[in-house]
Amino acid sequence: MTDFDWTERFEGTAALPVDVRRRLNATARILKFSRGDQVFGPMSVPDGLFFLYEGRIRVSQSSENGREIVLYRVDAGESCVLTTACMLAEEAYNAEGVAETDVTAILLPKTAFDRLAAEEDAFRNFVFAAYSRRLIDLLRVVDDVAFGRIDVRLAERLLTLGQGRKEVHATHQDLASELGTAREVISRVLHDFQKRDLIAQSRGVISLSDKMGLATIAQSA
Image 1 (cartoon, rainbow, N blue to C red):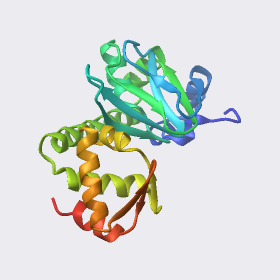
Image 2: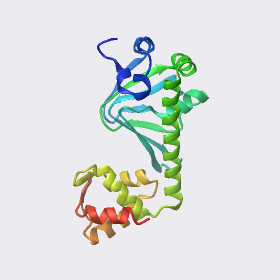
Image 3: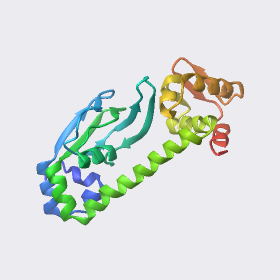
Image 4: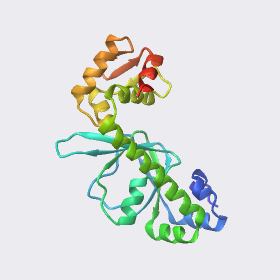
C-alpha cells in the first residue's frame, strides 16, 4: 500500500482484497477544490466514479428562470450518486456540485469502475446501496416541495444547518434555494418565527433563539 491509501476511507473499498485496493490506489486520481469552487456542472459528462475523501459538496439544480433547489449534499466518506448515474448512462450532468468546504476527492476512471463492479461483490454492493439511499433522499425532496408545509421544512432545515450551533449563516435567498421556494416565502415565515421569539435576524445571520420551539414545529408535520 502507498502512504496515502484512500481506500481505507470508504466502507466498500476498505472491504476489498489488498491486491484490488493496491490497484485502485495506482489507478485513481486525487482532485482538490477550494471552498466555493464548482466541482461539476451542467453539460459535462463524468468519466469516472467520484468519491469524497474530505469536505462537503452541495448538489443543486436551477430552473430556466434562475430558481435553485438543493437536491442533497455529499459528505466525506460518500460517493456522489449523480456522478454514478451520469457515468453509467454516459449523459451530461443536469445539476451543479459546489464545494461548501475545501474538498479532497478521488476519481476512479470508468474502465476501472466497470472491471471492479463486475468482479467484486463488496464494491458493487457499496455503490448501489449508496445509489438507493440517495434516490430515497431525492424522492423525499420531491415530496417535501410538493406537499410539505414550508414552516415545518424551514424549521427543520435551520436546525440541520445549525449543526449544534446557535447561528446559521445564510441569506433568505440561500434558504429559498435549500427548500426550492421563493425568497419572499422564506422572508414571510422567518418574520413569523421572529415574532414568536424563535429566531433573531441580522444581515446574513439567523440566531436560533429557541431551538426547542423550532424542533416542535419541525416535528409537527
